[in-house]
Length: 181
Image (cartoon, rainbow, N blue to C red; front, top):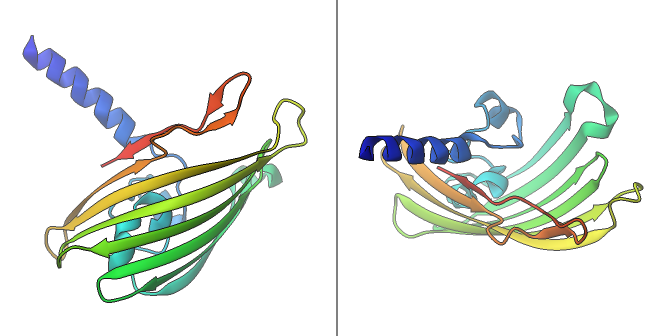
């Protein structure tokens, strides 16, 4: 009986961990969205702790999902790495029924050669021509840990939007909280 409870719990956690929407760049798309330990400037979105291991870069990503203009997205990111810390800023605009513009600022710090932690503060501006959705500004945050086991293996953890910021008041609609491992 205990094995059944354990299996059910693990299945629920794995479903939550692997349901990673949306992929932020071509590499995370090719990884099926499992990018919590992938080191790139796009770590500002999926694990800010990875920024400590990423070289200083400016990156751009543009997507046109399904070939439909209403599902297009553009993102510009710049990160600057120091010896034991990193800082990054990004701007993202995403079309759809609701236009989402997001500015993110991240800071990451290495605690030793293999362990880093990071936090991202996101300012989201939602607007729509649809009467159902009203314009709204919300503040969210992400936090992450990254541990480099060896040169080829690492483990990471990220929590995104644990406060489940509210998009619209009626009917109550919130951004989801996500946990990735």
